[in-house]
Image (cartoon, rainbow, N blue to C red; front, side):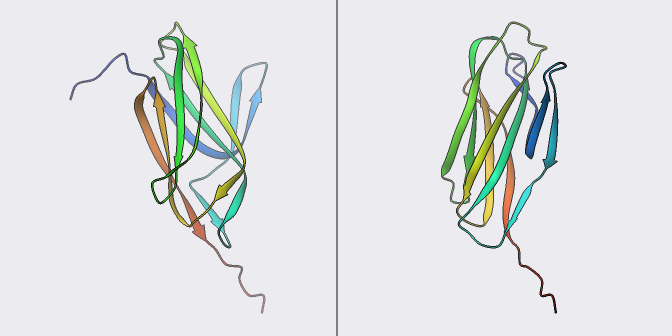
Length: 137
């Protein structure tokens, strides 16, 4: 297997409820990490969803980082991202997206895909599952 040493590298790709950033130290706390959302019915909305990608080996100016969310029917339902400039390939850059009222149209497996500089880096799934409220009898 050949390795492209110039390619960006993803060191973290997570979904959580919130991200708290300490402005003095530039550290981030990821609150409520999850892989699945339980809902009573669809369509509905996820009140708040944060996506965090940490990427290293970025070289150059305005390197585009793109995050897609793909629904169970393989339709891209969200695209977001940022441009990163770095002269230090050892630096780690965080891209944090905060989505409010994200629509969950159907049950099933949703996929997040991360690209940097037009190259696919990684994907991960999250699941929308049906839950029920137990009887109180």
